[in-house]
Length: 243
Ligand SMILES: [Zn+2]
Image (cartoon, rainbow, N blue to C red; front, side):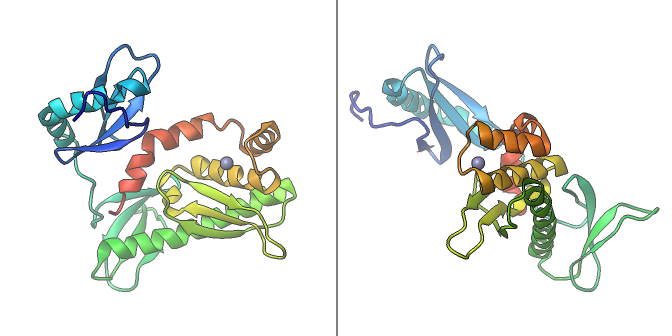
């Protein structure tokens, strides 16, 4: 590799002997350094400027063994199995195997709410049920927020885009606006999912993130900050769920 190579960019991903490494420019950093992002299961190689990213990449390659060891310490994502507890919009649900089609069973005095699955493929049946639940609940939140803003009810769809919890497509002709949510919001606390719904509904009136847009969102759910922080801190765990 040439010492003069500087074709690296902020945010680039590298593979260092099989380990994922992300390059990051941090203007206040004084030197190149490595740190482990446990939630994203990757190592961040930081440099003070874009020019020095090549140096950060070389540093990461020098420490390939250290990187592999640190990433190896992170526990693997849990497979969905009977006995696990999954929180849906903050409510704990015990995953249970029993006969019949996948279904929800409400909490009773003897135990928590349950997701009961009879299908041989346990995990996929749980995920299908969670997606159906997510669509119902997110549609209800959307209806409430759109109504409060005086906006027409959009079409609500689910997706699974990484790093994108919701998106809003404006109406075209007679077609209504379309709001698409990540089904994984079902794994977030209710207030966080509700914030994302309020955010996307805000875009029914304002297709930008200007002061008017935030005024709408704040009017619906108050400050966005704790919810955005929560998604930043827990997003990787939500994306690892059921994989
Ligand atoms: Zn937005």
